[in-house]
Image (cartoon, rainbow, N blue to C red):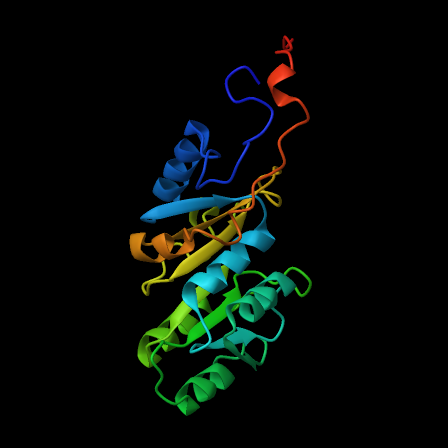
Length: 218
């Protein structure tokens, strides 16, 4: 409390960014071998930010039929056109990608590294290969895999031979904490930093915050 107070006091784009945010983002980027990491208050907000950064009304988004509701909410927020492929079915995904007509934006494929309700994982390397072949971007939600699966707990996306546009992760599962993050390259992450969006709403100021005494910590 002495160094950081009782709250951020604003969004990341205004006054809410603290040195500890930057330190954690840098450490995560190094750990995941990504260009950049951006922190979010929750996985729901991170997933909405990811979808609005990678898609718009000109984009076709192909999602696994069993993806989390937050990802579907992100598709609706972006205005993109939604298609669902059969759960972990690469053949169905391939056929749907083949049938797409050329558009101004590349299609986006969305899946999870571990589907918690089913306990199943997709062939991420196979999906990444399909995306590369068809010129699609890939978004993977690692909420349930990060910390327990992959090399050193870095998730099942770590070490893939094809690039993943964005990886979503949370601290509320294996890490036993709270909050979430997106990890990607510099260009994609810059698109996540919009003036108005999932990370822009400030928390309310504490009542009479300027009169709150500094309490000693044991």
